[in-house]
Length: 150
Length: 248
Image (tube, rainbow over all chains, first blue to last red; front, side):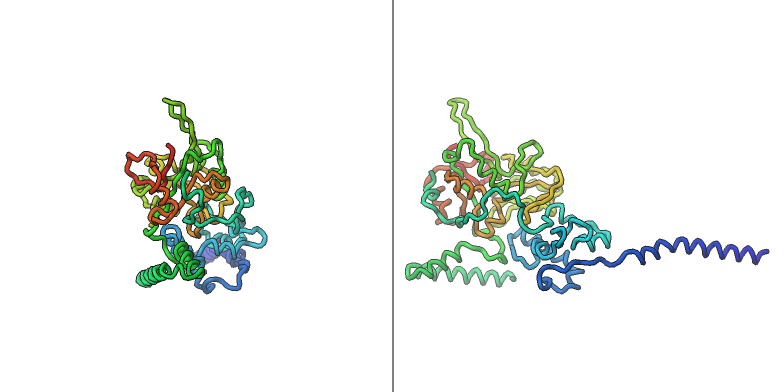
């Protein structure tokens, strides 16, 4: 009798273990690696493996340089990323979960705040009232009228 | 570029400018070069304290009912143009009436880009900041939305974004939970253009707004300030505003 009870306990434990293990097997089988669309440019500004691990550091460094010092180099600018990586379908880097930024960030379960403020699409808003084609004079270039005040 | 290298470059540019000034009369080419070197800042170079951007607004020239500067600002910076208590206004037209004699006139009011900015003083995180060239900005990356700066500003120049935004202009990031205000269109200034409001005012032919470098004695702005009387709004506060007015 004792042997039967031991055997039954073993079977039950094995069953419980199997039930517990199922979701993780499913997860392992069901979620594939994110598929990223190729950027428009020939190659990224840095090596792909480097970018995967360090893009946030580059962006943070650039953001402080641009915001606080007015350094506007384009190599590591977020605007540059968007221009190259906006999806061919959505035209955005973060509109859907398949877009460039979201694909990995959804996969890793990390939320990113960039797009609360920054534009996810390249180019200006279409509803532009002012005339962009108008040539702007240099800030210090005096014209006969404004040079003399009123 | 490291600091010594930058210093060296600056020095070289100074030498170049001096040399250029000597030979400026010699030919057209040198004149063009001198102009280019003196007026543009390469993108990798930080804004320096050798300049201070400022503005002179002649309220006598400011058109009655004209809202072009406001509209140009809204377009450039992606504001929706609403004027409710919770809407962002970076520049707004004020109507002023002297009750003693009934004189009425209008003026645009915007961030005055103070040298001693109260908004920068009170900011608990350092988000409210003054760039080396005198432009007062909000670093949204570290703004916590406490709005002390809005209370501190004597000009009511700052707004708070209450609702989520989408479709921002790529050059002007804006978002919910941050304070914002006029930036002198810093993205345009950095590529040697004038702020959108000034450009619109000139395009309309009013020429009421003059933008330039307060530290350059040769700039149109400095010359105008030297030759004509101008006032700061709330000069009693001693903030040394970057925006000056005439006719008020």
